[in-house]
Image (cartoon, rainbow, N blue to C red; front, top):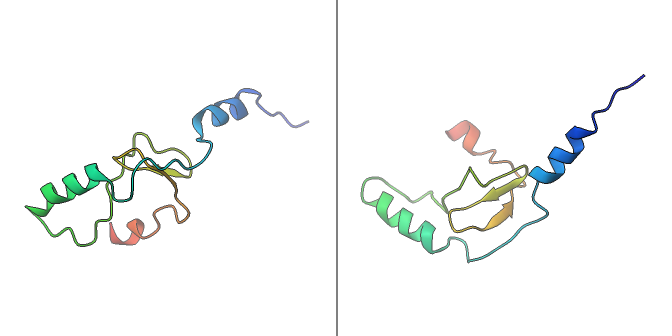
Length: 82
């Protein structure tokens, strides 16, 4: 006998986004503003955009401008470089 929770699939559906959603170009105006601010105190040459991790879900990464992108590589380069 295999027990499968009926609640688990429902919470997953409610949690996941239904696809990408681009509201601005990348990097957007808010990312440009934050890059400029950060650039006053450190090198920002490797920054492409700023993430909003509170809004990011599942396989989707949301930036500070509200763009929702499919995170195909699950930020793999951030793991070894920090």
